[in-house]
Length: 142
Image (cartoon, rainbow, N blue to C red; front, side):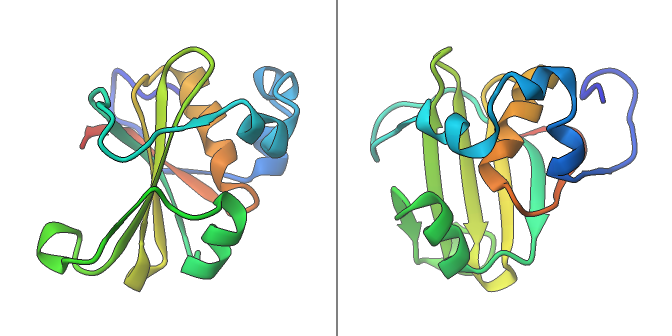
């Protein structure tokens, strides 16, 4: 699915399907992908991020068990989407940034990337495996 050009409808991607894509087979799935990422410390500069996907129904405890402790927790609901937010951010071996924001009260995980190519977006969805990830119709600036 191209994220540029004409507007497209939302597309749900099950990882079983995404991982059969030729470009995904070479990644070795989620754990191998996670092992290639370097966590970004709070306060380090980050490039422009783009919202590209989301997953619903993810509890704070489940995502923390999956990704570890977040690098930042926003507790002021006036500075967030309306409640606490947990943030994880990573740098890929290609020096791109991928981030996850869990909107805690809504159990809504949002995926952000610094590179919006189809490959980067598909690759980044591995962070939210095994949940169903819905790709946005186009990238939205954060």
